[in-house]
Image (cartoon, rainbow, N blue to C red):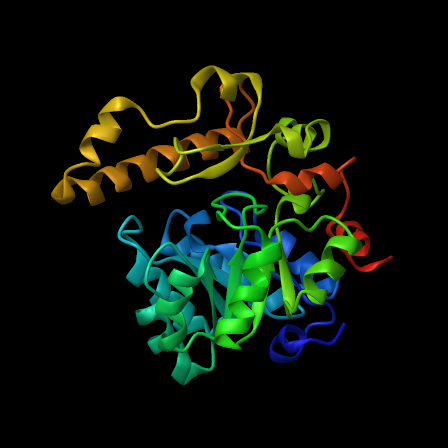
Length: 314
């Protein structure tokens, strides 16, 4: 399984444990490194810079392999500059950028040798980030969990490789070895996998959230704009069905006004994060559980190592 991803990060298998809001933690990333892959954690999983630094200190001390940080680059993340500066100070191994221009991140990371992988959902966005000098593209397909794309990996991966000729990491649709092999055969240098790791012993989420990943499958995943204003995949629980999947009339109205739009997005994003936080860490009937179609492969609570074994063994 030697690929460009294993070579540039020095990992055994071409797998990134995807950054998951309020799911990824240091325990999971340490277990990922022990299993021969690499894990990435969202900077937004930490309320304060001191909490973020404490997590990076723990990873520097105990993680036996590379680890990454996911940064939200658009204006909804008011802590962006602080988070980026902390990543630079700690010289994390790589940064995954989402939802905004990665220009400042790439320019700051390049002199330090920090790799930058950029989430893209189509060729149009890829054409904006590739000239900036990113080290790889993460092809976020329609099969991905969380903030998913609109195109299937079957067309997105080959299109990105054909036009740009830089490494492409596939995000979405991997829950077993067959899924991994399929993405590599299409030309991807690795995969980013999130949802199969939610129901692990190392995961910090509630027992109900883990049970939902076991009880529900790919046909129970729906897209909602209620969490962040852009489509996000969630488990279609009875509560999710009761609240619907579209932003309300007031939010739609405010989105029409350009000078208000960014503030509305910030408000929607903040509200969505609070909803996800409640769902992830506190079991109530009013829960919104973020996950992707690859929970189809989750049948019991496993260790991170066991999930990795499922991905790499035929």
